[in-house]
Length: 143
Image (cartoon, rainbow, N blue to C red; front, side, top):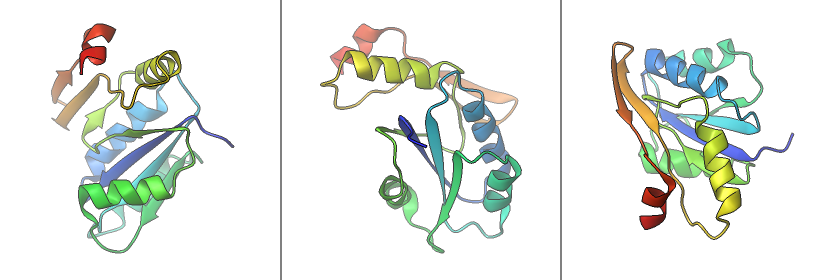
């Protein structure tokens, strides 16, 4: 299957957060994506178990058997990705259901854009969610 967006997620011992992050990803209105979940040397098999429990072939578990750090993990994810675009998503972020579709539509409209970002929610527990909105396209174009 050919994917439009490769979502790269690094994780390390934050299984309960990862589960919520993946749930928000699976709820996307845009469906042409793959997620590469890079295990940064979790002390147990929790990331592997979480990814496999979803039983969605768009979710791919990757590990090098050591902690690559956030940047190294992202680079490892990119090397294994096959999407037209890359989207970084932390294991403590939630995406609104329209997030990938609006980013993809924006990328198609502004083909010379080097980078696009959008709204996400950062959380430490389900009860503690902080919204990080992008209010309009003009704000994106200024940066």
